[in-house]
Amino acid sequence: MSDPDEICRRAVEAVEDDPASAYEMFQEAASMGHPNGMFGMAELKMSGRGTVRDPEGAERLYEVAADAGHPPSMYRLGMMWAGAGGHQEDPSRAAGWFSRAAEAGFPPAYPEIAGILLYGYGVPEDPEGALTWYGRAAEAGDPLSMFKAGYMMSEGVGCERDEASAVRLFRM
Image (cartoon, rainbow, N blue to C red; front, top):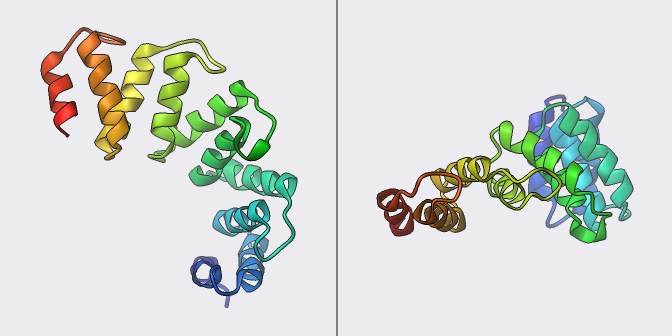
């Protein structure tokens, strides 16, 4: 088989029952330069399913895939640098990766970068930017972001007070 998308699809189907075969399929797709293959390998390396647990190797794979424009890999790197899984925390790097994932249109990154901007985690505080990203996350269907954006609007954090918009978000 020479279609890396098809190889990755089959690998995803195999993960539960045969993670070692899934790892080999992801590896085949990755050898073709396919970012989803690299991401799949990294996910399995992080968990140790189908291969030896190797967080450092996973991080390298996420970086290669992220540099190729793969938003889920950018997000995973943000999580790692935020301290997930016992990884060394680096707020500035976490902010950078979450920002890249959000700018690439990856909805799970929207509330992450919003919180980073709101509280100044590794970057200067930016309530207006936080409200923008909470708003995008709310539009993408994230209930907690709906609440946070609504609260910010009701209190005038990052914007002029807008109770009508706040109520609309709270009702969502």
